[in-house]
Every structure is written in structure tokens, then in C-alpha cells.
Length: 424
Image 1 (cartoon, rainbow, N blue to C red):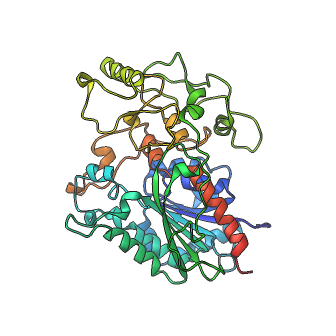
Image 2: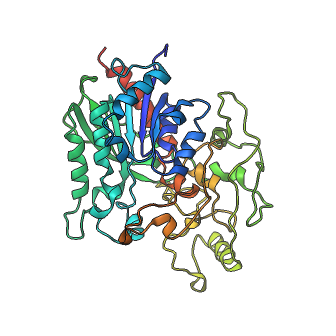
Image 3: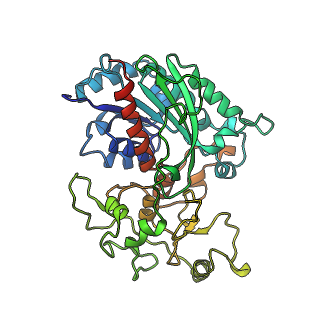
């Protein structure tokens, strides 16, 4: 490598939202870990052209296999040297990030995890494996992200509120050489058209940084995370060019209905080749089939500010109509993993995979691998019977992702932090 590259390792990467934003900010992925094969394939197919070495030998599924392999780190450094001509002894990894599965910490996760004690869910202990990877690799910066529910979660029903986060914080604090700060961020504050609160914990390696604020635990006030940009778009701004007046339930729109109308739509439709041309073919705009009753309910909701008449109500706990324009308080939604959590703002239907991806700020060229959706035990598993494996269809991959726009703002900040504060 002839010029400075900002290197990135992504653990529990999902379909790659966090990596994508960091890549847009100037980082290059040198290793990816993701347990689910479909999500990993989504990550890889979008990087095969630019980072082909990831598919060869620089990826893994189960983090447990990695940390238990005594020869892993030796082989890892060898592969990095072979594929990227980068000696990690002389040039340490710039950034290691990870968002361990969070279904056991979120409110929705609790309902969908059969209310077993969180200490019984294997995925709730993966932060310890991430900490071990940080200890062994010693990146200049690491970032851990998770849901807001982590801050108040208990290991057991009779546990102390916040005890899980205290364990997480203590685990990362005990890694030698790092100064730790954290913050509850809201994605809407960084240009994402949804609220999406996330706990972000950042560690700076004091061997590579000077003049670090060691007092304030607040990651923004302490200079570990960027200040808000407050540049989020309205829903209509990001979705209006996808509205097909002739759509059919169960059908698919394969072409855009109109030219891009604003800077956001131009951004989404730009090709992944650095020039100014736009995509012609539309992907992932397949429409769900709905019964006449459901269509009637959706129509009523659209015309009546989201209200549902008594005779059309269901047991669904969170179905809402997407607002065309946000109120003064800004985005008020957080996309989850179900296609029918939200009703389109102008058409009586659930949102498509592509529309959900745009709400998460994925560009239209980004591909998603696997089933479109699934349900029941296939998606949620059943911890009571020790069924922890779950299918991760496209909607779930997108719903679980870190919005690339949020990651981009964080990535820009980290890159400047490295350039500004690294000891030469």
C-alpha cells in the first residue's frame, strides 16, 4: 500500500451498514465477522469488486471459533501481509467496530425471546469476545454499539437495573491501554430519517493518542464522537421517486417512476463507481400481498392520521403510517425487522425492502442476499428450548443494521481524530 489507508475490522457486521458508512468516510475493511450466512453474503457481494480478499480468507462466522483458535491472530496477520501488503506490527489497525446481537436487550427482543433470563442467552455475552479481540489486536480506536435497552437491562428478573451495561462497561474499561467514553446517540441527529437510539461506546488507545480528555465520560463532550449534524430528510423526500401508481400487490416495480427529485434521491440512486450517473434499474421493490381487509385498514389509516377503526384493529402492537413530513421534534420512528411495522404514507401497503433500506440510508446499488422475509420461530428462535439459531431475511438484515449515514459521520470524525492526535 503506497498511501495511507485507514483500516477497519467489523465484528458482528450483519449486512454491512456500519462498514459501508465507514468506507464512505475513508476506511477500508480488512476483516469481517458475521454469524449468519445470508447477512455475511450481503456484506461480501457488495464488496467483491473493491475488496475481493474479504471473501477469500479474511472473514469468519462464529466469533467463538476465532477467539478459541490459538493460531488465529498469527494467521490473520499473515493473510493481511499477503493480501494487503500491510504489516500490522508496523502499522496497527486503525479501527475495530462491533455490534453484538441485541435481541435480548431491547424491549422488542424481550417479547420475542420468550422472557427467559438474559443471562441464559448466549448472544448476550458476545461483548466479552469482542473485548478479547480488541486486547489481542490493539486497534487505535474501537467502537461498540447496541440498543438503548442495554443501559437499563438486568441479567435476571430480580437483578439490578443497568447491571448488564455496568458489566459491559467494566469489561471494556479493563482492556489495557484504552480510555473509554460512551453516549446514547439518536440517528436522527446525524442525518438519518428515523429516531433510532443507540448506545455507542468508544475506546481510544493511549499509545497512539495524546491530549485525550480523561475526565468526561460523555463521548461527545469528551471529544470521542462527533456533534450532531441535524440534517435529516422527510420521508416523502427519500421515497417519492419510488412511488409507482400502477403497482400490484404481489408484484414488483423494476424501474424508477421518475427522475431523482432532490439531493437525497440523487444520493440514493448514484452508481457505485464514483461518477455522476444514476441507476436505471430498480431492485428490491417487490410488494407484499394483502387481504382486502388489510388494504381497507391501511386505506383508513392513511386517510385518518394513522387511526384504526375498532372493527379493523388487530393484536399487532406497533403498526403505524409513515408520515410524509416530520413534526417539529423530527423523526419519531425506528425501523425494526418486520415489513408490516409501517404503512406507506400514500399507498395502502407495507413498505418494500428498498424503501426500508432507504429509511436506513442504504444506497440503491446495495444488494441484500437471502429470503425477503420470514416469520415465527424461524426468525425469533426459541431460547426456552435452546433454539438460538435464527433466519435473518432481508428485512431483518436492514432493520438490524447501523444506518450508513450515522456511521459515515462517525467515520469522518474518527479519521480526523487519527490524523490530528496520532503521535508520529
